[in-house]
Image (cartoon, rainbow, N blue to C red):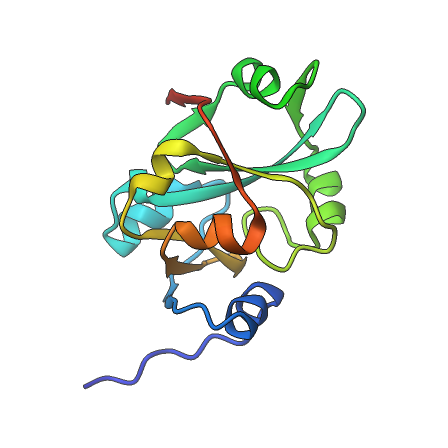
Length: 163
C-alpha cells in the first residue's frame, strides 16, 4: 500500500477537522485557468460532482459565495432574483481574495476570512459525495454535500446554466 501524499493544513481543513467532518484528500497538479473541469479530468471525477466555490457580490458590493457544479455556470439574473438582490456579479480576483483569504483557484467555502452568505445549487445537495476546494490550488476534499448546509448554512438556489 503506497503512502498518501500529505497535504498541510489549510483554514478549510482545520474547520472541517474541528467540526469532526469526515473528508478525503485529493491533491492534483494545478493548472492556471484549468478550473473544475481540469481537476475533474486529472482526478477521474465527473465534473458535475466537482463543486466550484465562486465569490460574487451584490449591487451594494456585499460578498457572497455560490457553490456550483464544475460543468455549469451561474445565471446571475436567476441568482439575484432568488436571493432578493437587484444584481449579482463575480468579484474581481483581488477582491475575492480579500474576502475569502484564499488565492483564486484555491478558494474553499470553509474557513473564509470573512463570514459570507453561502448559496448552493440545489442539485449539488442530491449528490452522495462532492469534491470541493480544500483551501489551496491543486487540492480538493471529498465530502457529503450536506456538510455545506450544516456547517455553512448554505441555502439552496436554482441558478445553473449548462456551460
